[in-house]
Length: 73
Image (cartoon, rainbow, N blue to C red; front, top):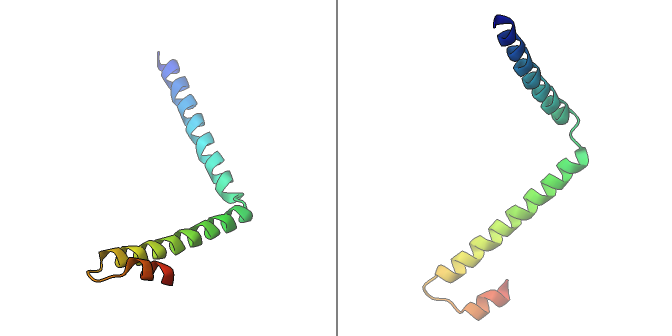
């Protein structure tokens, strides 16, 4: 009974250590091209957020000529 418990604990430990090592290796070998793609995507998101803020401001103003404001964008 005691040896089977030790066996199970060893298996669980091996599985956990394997997962940690795999994650560490993936982080260590991260692709710089992928990081550049991530930076580009974040820049696009920021640009879109700014455009949404402008549109929200235009729509929520009390006095606005929607066609004129949209043409100005």
